[in-house]
Image 1 (cartoon, one colour):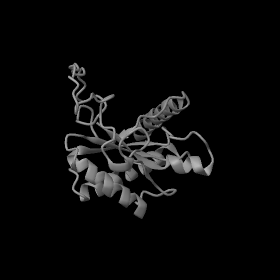
Image 2 (image 1 turned 45 degrees about the horizontal axis):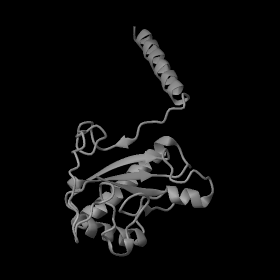
Image 3 (image 1 turned 30 degrees about the vertical axis):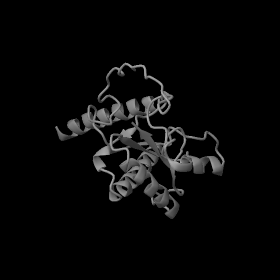
Image 4 (image 1 turned 45 degrees about the vertical axis):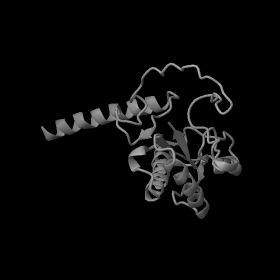
Length: 194
């Protein structure tokens, strides 16, 4: 009887392995590794509501409409934090590392000051990697990078409840190139400000 159960277990494992292999060969991207459960604040499905209607604003000498919505970083002197498509600059990492450099700490200190003045905003810290390494390795490394950034911001006084982390590993490169400069740009933590 134990031999028969072992054969069934081996067959079930083989079927599962073939299913995983077939899915991997289908060309679909693996899901992002998120630390928020579905339905929690910060998850892609949480709090989806229709946008509020925009009321017209009377223009005056000191009132002008804001172009677009969301934080733009234009209120920061000299645009010091302007990043790739958002108000907070990306944090760069060395190869195979989640350690914050001195430059990264300096940038994060400025980010913390700005975030403390924008208490209504929530931030998703995205961990990204270059193309080297396996999908699993890069998802884990991306999460370590995002957590390092989140933890440092929290140590500077930004409420941890406002900071969620997600890892995209190597699946969402900023630069599609394969040279060293492109890979260095892809090793980053990116801020999705909401």
